Image (cartoon, rainbow, N blue to C red; front, top):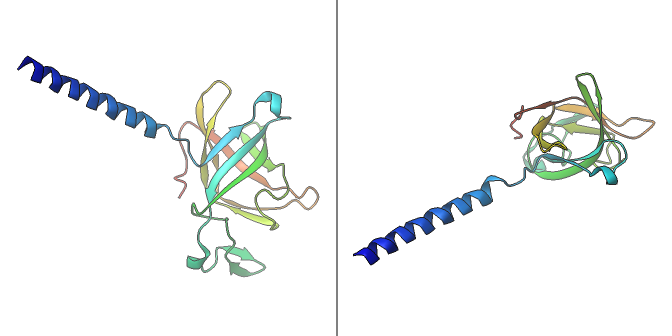
Length: 165
């Protein structure tokens, strides 16, 4: 009887221990929408990499971007999570206003415009504090001199402002 009770308790302890281990593997997966800051020794200025899931299948889209008066579909732009994109940006802050300017000319697109949906990106600062960098949805146009895009109205918060549909 003692042996059966001991085996039952041991099985219960192993079950609970395994269950906790499985939970820990799934609870902390990195977000697909995130900001990666380069280590100080590897960057010049405040360059960060934005990784974002955006866009939708063109087969189900009748047009989502207004181009020269026509609604068209452009892959990897707008609402959805169809494409994984990344772009190196330089964050500039003036008071409460934060802008992000791309540092590479064609990271996002070869088009002269880019339709950015609302996105909240996981962000961890140098002190290991967790925040979200929120980017309001906006149509941005390539600067004719620098050929870069600048996103405006970004802000940090403790929780996500957008659901990243």
